[in-house]
Length: 234
Image (cartoon, rainbow, N blue to C red; front, side, top):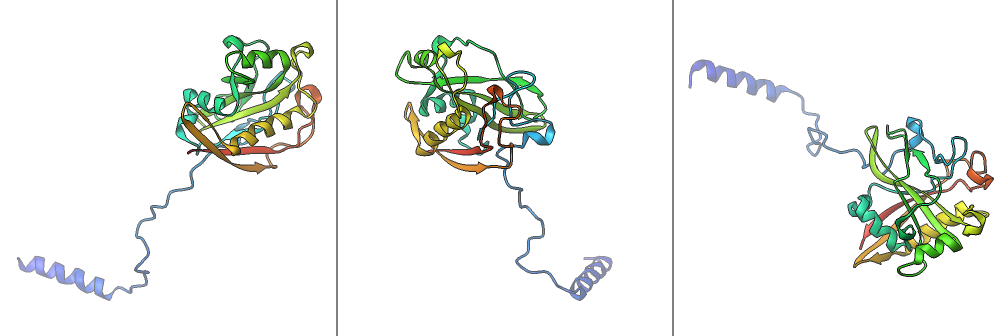
């Protein structure tokens, strides 16, 4: 080793040795802590809202969110159809939709987008949702939050209970709260479809939408509670 190299090493060593040491030996040099995972984004932060657009003026509450921290399978369109069946819903009668399409702005950069899914209470096999279309019952619409500004993968759901066909499927009194609670009760109880079992944990939020009937379709009041479900596969 040359004299220059030796001198350089001695200089570095002497400066390191002389430097005060006030570091906690257990402290990491680099902070590798990741921020908490995001299960959903508040639509209001980007101009969205927790009412859908049934008409340009009135909407129905988005009263259930299935968090993006749920089982990844049910965050897909195909997997979500399985999960809805485990809760007692299925596709519309004969796959045909009657009535208006609703829109929703989830604040994800996509603006107002049409409902992606509508399912109805599955009273019994084969023709179960056809009976719901006649007799009324529970149903929900769903939209996925997956735009470029807020890509959580969460499902935003507007659940309600409706009248029978003779009353043009109007929402029953207290129908938004009833529809939400029916869905949530089944989610936390757990269910299965085609050997897949799921069970959900629920967090109730009361700070996302004002209770009451202002801006709500049919003028039916809702209680301002929104259920955040995190669904686990068992």
